[in-house]
Length: 151
Image 1 (cartoon, rainbow, N blue to C red):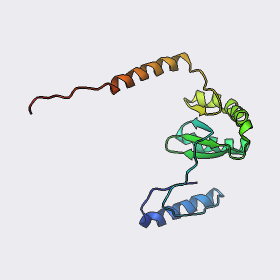
Image 2 (cartoon, rainbow, N blue to C red):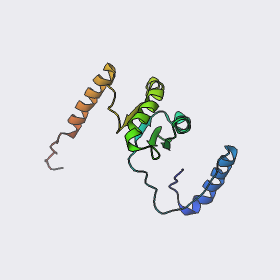
Image 3 (spheres, one colour):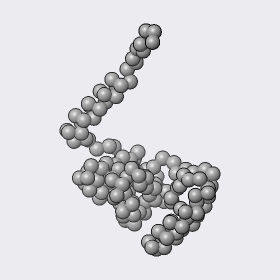
Image 4 (spheres, rainbow, N blue to C red):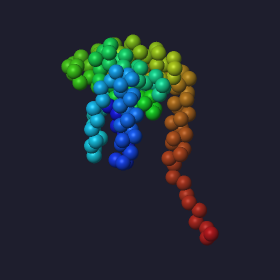
């Protein structure tokens, strides 16, 4: 699914480009102009990779594990939905996917999260960085007094 945020009068240009892209990649294009965006809900698993790797990784995850993926290409985030998996098996399925792809993700600076699994312990370097970042956030959230003098 591709969602465009564009004025209606520009749709013809996008439609032409997307039709050509779909044909070149042997994809089926079904266009639908709607007023609202579709809602997917809370993902079962999230992967953070680089934008240039996100589509390929999502395709592999879908083909190998049957997980429906929604890719946010601009930031390299993949949301995975286990719609066809019984709720009592979701943790095991996510565990298999994570085991298969976590090393690749971490080697290139990516990460994963799932509401079905306990998060991994961060590496020592990441723990230091996270602690510093948390301190900076706390400092930035402290109230500051505004100047009261006449200007």
